[in-house]
Length: 112
Image 1: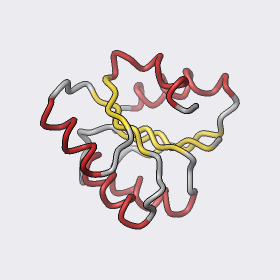
Image 2: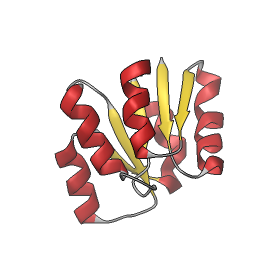
Image 3: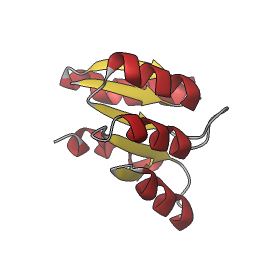
């Protein structure tokens, strides 16, 4: 399975990569929402782990843009913001799930 990890924090991308790599996933990374939209179109990953707060376009807008062109895209918002408004906006944009960064160890089970 090919995964796209999108987060402006290199340490967070590295942590998610270390959690997912033992499962044999191919991993592609992006540091911002704008690049993630372009990378999605060229790489066509099976699932995206998308941060919310990033420079340029945020994760919800990037999700909405990707889903507009690729309605079957699987996108999981991964954020530190436990906020009902953001959760609702993420789901409305097309995210499959909204996961807090404190629950990163749950990510492998979400791909089943």
